[in-house]
Every structure is written in structure tokens, then in C-alpha cells.
Length: 76
Image 1 (cartoon, rainbow, N blue to C red):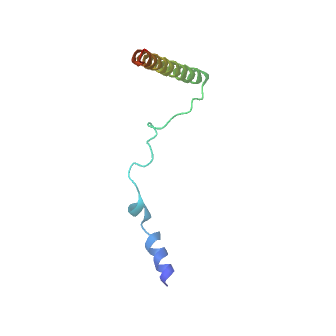
Image 2: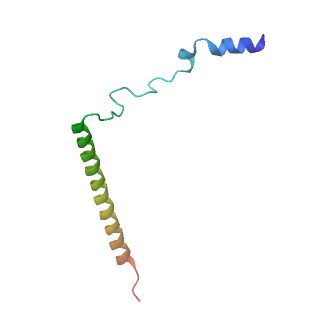
Image 3: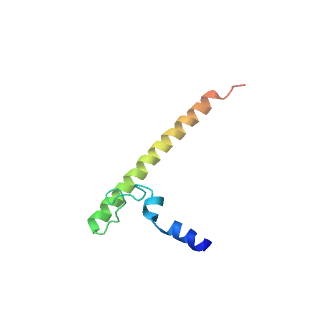
């Protein structure tokens, strides 16, 4: 009787007891896979633009860091 009681206790009313509100994203918040040719091109262009922007930022930060290191090195 004991295992059956546990199964009944945990088996009833699961949605209200263990559900986490807003766990799954809404359809408008989820990523959409592009299907049309124009959508694919637009998404690729968006990704390319983002990649180039991040590369530009990374190179600028590396150049600034290199300039600071060159400036801070002690001269004999």
C-alpha cells in the first residue's frame, strides 16, 4: 500500500504542484528558422554584420591593450 500511496500522491495534480510559470518561451520570443530565400539572405547578412562588428571591437581592444603594454614597459 505504501508505494501505491506515494504514486497517487505524486501522480495527482502535477501541473499545479510542480509547474514553473513562464518556463518555456513564448512563440514570439523564440528563434524562427528562415525558410524563404530572402529571409535566409537577410539572416546571413545580419550574422555577417554582427561578426564584423564584433571583430572590429575585438581588434580595437587588442590594439588599445598593446599600446598600453608598450607604454607601461620600463625602459633600461
